[in-house]
Length: 288
Image 1 (spheres, rainbow, N blue to C red):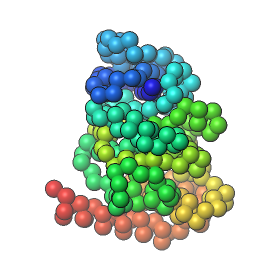
Image 2: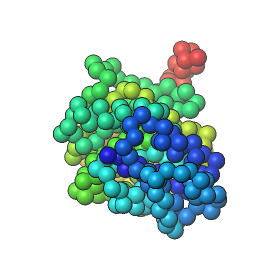
Image 3: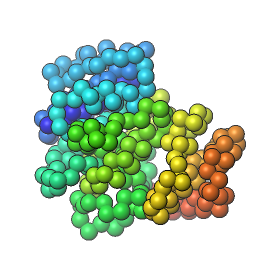
């Protein structure tokens, strides 16, 4: 039922645990496509030591994570595509929860559960009337919480035929760009049940990009965004990145991004900065 796409590039210390978190699922109808994106360490050998007929290793020269995921999608044999990076983990209930969602909303094509960070970072949330629900206004709600994450997203395979695959020209934000395309066409169903862990301490995590031109935030064309909620969403995303560059004292990319998006003013950056400081203060006071 599920084709699980795991891109692999130099994750020899974590890939075994990642794959076992899939094999340990309560729901067992799946295949695992490990797309080796030109790893130069012992990652592939680690995978080869895990004996399970549902695991397929697909080798390609290094082309980036988007190309690896696209390769997995095109070779998937099942209708539902799930994603997991080579250093993150699923709890045993992940596929069971997704199956419940698909059963409850048979006409829907884009689903996500919830996750937690390995450093126990608290994520802000809207108040919910039920555990599983249709997200009514994605772009408005996405300014207050991260609604979709790669390790919790599940998409019907045929959706990629009409909406396209990952944008391989993007190195940062490629997943967000895909979610935005999908949600405009298919909407989103979300579960508040936590089924995955984002491991912040894992190998070769991408930091703040120096290659600004290859980021989604740089390439957003605000002049083509008609919805007010989307305008707010994208401007906050840009303000967030401006804040991060300023905090990292990367004034070259700060100025470059500001010139690219002149309608996002300093007040938006200051607003985001103030909100960030307040949120961190609340966490220190109330979250043990």
